[in-house]
Length: 136
Image 1 (cartoon, one colour):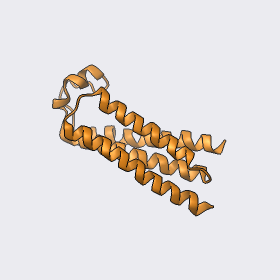
Image 2: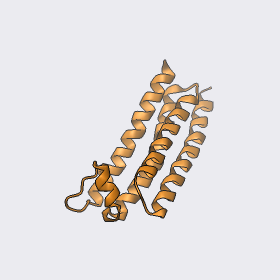
Image 3: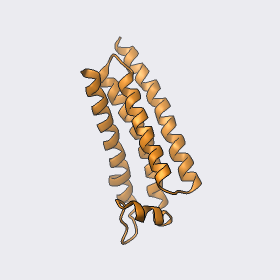
C-alpha cells in the first residue's frame, strides 16, 4: 500500500512542479500575447511562433525538474522500492513526449525538452537509489 501511495503522491508532486514552473513562473515572467489561449491545442499548434522563448525554456526546465522531483518524492515515501519512482518517471517522460509529438515546435525546443526530460529521469534514478540504499 505504501508503494501505491508513493506512486500517486510522487506523480502529484511532479505534476504540481511542472504546473508551478510552466504556468505560475513562466507565464508571469514572459506573458503570452493578447488573445492567446494556452489551453486550446489548436491555438497552440497554429501560434507556437508567438509564444515567448522564455516560456519555452520554462517548459523545458519544468519537465526536467518535474521528473526529478516526482521520482525523489516517490522514493522518500516508498523507502523500500525503486518501482514507484520508475512509474512516476516513465509517466512524466510519456507526458513530455506526448507534448513533443502533439505540438509542432522548433528543433531546439523539441530536442532540449526530450533530452532534459531523459536527463531528469537519469538523475532521478540516481537520487532514488541513494534514498532507497540510505534507508536499508
